[in-house]
Image 1 (cartoon, rainbow, N blue to C red):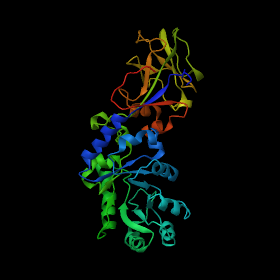
Image 2: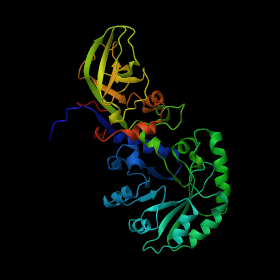
Image 3: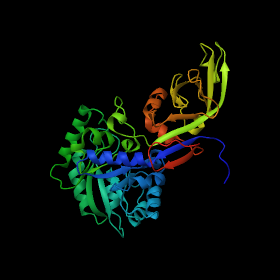
Image 4: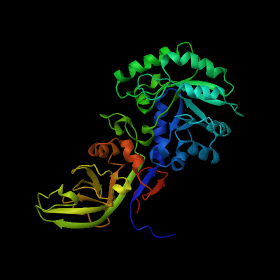
Length: 367
């Protein structure tokens, strides 16, 4: 096996993922858990994360090919396609692989009514409660339930919605009221809560909850840290210094002259750049940990390298370990400095970054 010379890794801590799943369980008062693993498990790797999600009652995702891969890997629990199907032809394959679907508009209902499937499906009828993205209108719910219930293509029916503003109590009150009214008198299990809903409204999450972001150790609330919610980061992006240089006062560092030294400065160069998924939009001053201590970005992130001010870390040298986000440096903080949301960073790590999976907690290992 060839030597990996560029020391940049994304460490995936399965112990942290299990801990976060346990945290969901503590919040949901007996509801079933469908762990959301869309977008390759939020960039962590679907098959990589799978061993830590064995206690979930099922998985929710977007991609039919990924769901089929899970079935081929002998995953036997519930799989739910969150956007349902995109053509009637897909229904046979969905049926063959025992995959549940979300139905969110009338055309999908009609397609099911016109289908003859060897195996009927579990269907989640999604109701629009104010997010105005996907979902049937509340006043259509009873009619569409009746039609779905009468269809030979439907084996079991559930009702669901999505809380788009569960970060605040007031943001969830109106959607919950709309959902309750739409579902009144209908005897089907309900699925309501996402991560914010699980943490804020465990008592109204429904019979089946759908946590995503919190599983990966990230807070869904802008003013509350993951640590304060007893969540542990699953991904740690790690690298090392590949160069150190002394730069006099008044000199520029990196592209476009956006950083000028105000004192004699030691600059460290990190093996990571925007081609690896680190955001180019971060500002000067963005925190990075070098040799376990806080340093700050100095200059524009380039394709393959990041420059940081390590003047106050005299022990830093070529080969010193670097933490770009993860344990001891929340991805939420880096996202704040970049002007993006944490999802974007986790999902944006590119294929040239090596992934390392660990089965324990904090790990100090040689890159």
